[in-house]
Image (cartoon, rainbow, N blue to C red; front, side):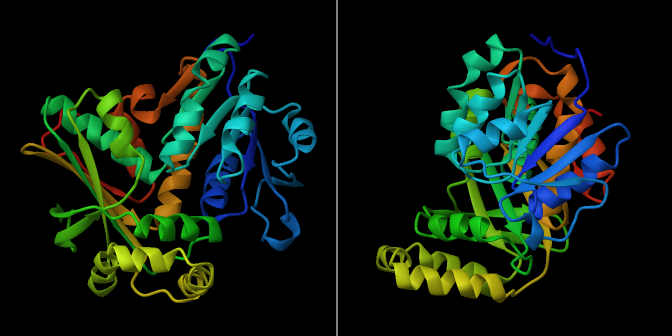
Length: 336
């Protein structure tokens, strides 16, 4: 059985490695000497190669194929939603570290249930590793520690012009039918004050438990004010029902995959009482991929068990290191 810190991860399997997030994470991981990065998916021939990595066809939905792919692997980074809890169990029962970028609360709840087997086999199962959730969780911890016993308000401004994969688009479309309330958040320049609409990101469900705060709310807006206004329309019951009709859903997914209105900038801001912190940059897939890659570099020093990113790393040094990759971090008057 491995013990925490006993060895650095040297062979990393990236499942869903040909998507936007997987490619960014693989590229960041491949830049470290002695690291073997395997970029895996069901159709590797259809995707451009990631320099410095090995391509492999892996069908994670096939238990036998997955078992073969795990041979010799130290760490698995999951960048897809393919029966994640089953894949995670297969990893931790072999003592393989497992890192997941999912933003789905039901999936995270299923992963959390693997805490005991992960501890038993000396594997770290890291959750909420991305931009939202992930960076937002770390900003939330910074704010909550400076203003305890206060509700967390989280705002996510995303670039509506960035290209995303089919799975991410489908998840976003499903969330549009579950918008619940709105409020204003002040984002760093050039965005300023914007109205955000509550969106079913997982951080608002997990943070009250991990940070011991009374409640948390996460709101979404897009850099395009026009598209953001359309979000509020999507929350109306009649429109929400329409979004779930198969034909309408197919048409919208096709349109979202080809039409890009806006830019690729993003900003995430967390407010807790009078305290606020933010993280900004370009391309949320880049931020998510690099967050996952940086967390994987910390794995040798992390304890076994299932935990969210804000429970695993010190947020200020982690975010500070992440920001050196071309992002901007503003922690207000938080101690360095």
